[in-house]
Image (cartoon, rainbow, N blue to C red; front, top):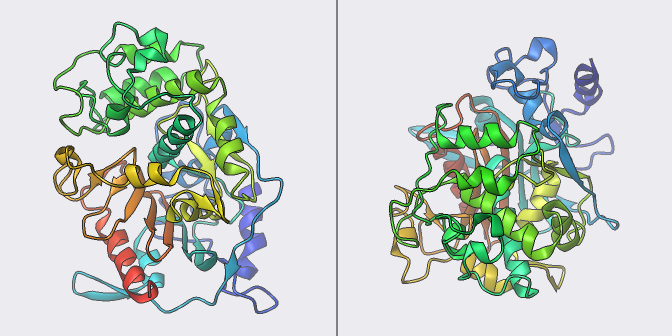
Length: 414
C-alpha cells in the first residue's frame, strides 16, 4: 500500500516540468516487463535472506538498506543544489536503429537515470513507480567509494603506503595469503589469490555473502581468511574478486579507527552537500560489507560522480587527493595487465574502478543487474543509471548503456 500511494502521489508529475513550468524529474509507474517485476502488487519488497525473485527486485533494490541491518550516513548539514536545464534532444545508434532516451527507457529495466553536466542536471527520469526519494542499492559501485576513502586515509597518514602488506593493519589475516598481499594489489584486484565470482549461487562470492549477510556476529577477518590459495604472484594478473574490497574495508576500519560509513560521511558525504540520508549494509559484527550495498538517492550519486569528475575537488576544496584520483583512473606503465582490452575484453581496471578504452581518461563504477555511474572528467558529464536486470551478469548488457553514454558525450560534451 505505501508504494502504491507514493506512485499515485507522483503520477500527476510524470513530465519534465513541475507545476511552475520549471525543468524537473520525470516519473513513470511502469517500465519494461513491469508485470514481471510485480507492478500489480505495487512492486513488493523481498525478505531478508530470501533468494532474489524477479517480482521483488524493484522493491528490494530501492529498499535494500531497510531489508538488511545498515549504518546510516547522514545527509549534509548544508545541502548543495544542482541547477536544472530543459532536456536536450539526444539520439543514439544501437544496431541499425536510431533511438532516443525515451526509447532507451522503454527497452531497458531502468529504475533511475540521471545525466548531468557539472552543476546542471539535464535528465532525471524514474520508472517502476520509483521516485527521487528512493535509496537505490549500489551493488559493486560501492567499491569505488572504498578506494577513495583509502586514498584519503593515505593522505592523512593513517595508511603509510599502499605497498604495505594487509597484515600490517589487519592482524587477523597474519599468516594468510591475503595478509601477505599489498594494499595496492587489492586496489587493482590483482592479488593472485583464488576466488570465484560467476553468480551461480555456488561460487565463492555466494559463500562470502552467506557468511556476511547471515546476521551472525562472525569475525569478518576469519570469514575472508578461508580464501587462502594463491595461483599467481601479486600484481601480475587482473582477476575480479569482491573479497578484495571486503579486505580493504577491514584495512580502512583498522587504520582510521572509524566505521567506514562514518568516515565516508565526514570526508565525502557531508562536504559534497548531499540532500538525503544514505546507508551502508553491515554484517553481524557491525562492519560495513565493503564490496557492495551502499544505498543512496539518485541525485546524491550524481553529486559523488561530480566530485569524481572534478578529480576529487568540490567547490574549490580538495576532498580526495587529486593525484590519488589520477592514479586511480590511470594504468602505470608497469601494470600492463590492467589496461583496457587486456584486463577484460573491453574495460581496464584502476583502484576499484573500471577504465574505458580510448585516449580520453574516462571511467565507470559498475554493479550487478545494471548499476552504472559513468564519468568524463574533460567535459564534466556524468551519467547515473540504476536498474533491475533479470540476471546479475549478462554478456553484452553494457553495450546499449555505453552507446547512449558515447552519444551523450558527442552531443552534449562540447
